[in-house]
Length: 247
Image (cartoon, rainbow, N blue to C red):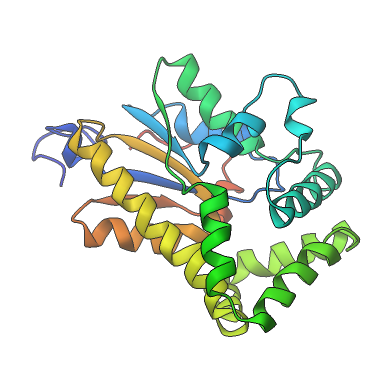
């Protein structure tokens, strides 16, 4: 809680400041809105939803290096899908929002923390836990994504923005194991890592994650007694050129 008498956004200690959780869409160019949200804030660090393996590709300074598609088959398929859709929806490239967050941190001399589980470990857990029916659905979804028109994705994205809870609920009903492994377990692990960073004095952290993680990560942090301020994707997308307040 903010100490009495202090200006909005000013806290008596960094551990009293809320963690800022920002929701992004991986195929939408949000570089400018992210800069407007993060720019005016007093931060100790920036955390992003990447592991080391993905960060080495997505944060590489060489654009060609970002096109590498190593790793498990499913991860390679989704990388191709994201590149195609990103280029067709606003000219974005996969990881643009993560690169923007990392760039803001570098410009301000802030550390960047990778808080996601290793992609190979996540997929290993998924393969071990997922029933055959869900496994086929997951693979088919990645393959179909290679050919689905961008206008269909944009329409679905708009539907998600209108009712994200309903959309996520549909995922949970269709693929409960996928939702548990890809969302719930990762949210808990990311919350643990953020709690550890808070314990090391990095209280004013901005966290950039895929928007589907925002509700679960917010709740996981609150269960750990950590205050949270959330900026979901639908709000981030509407950030105006004047920018938000620093509160």
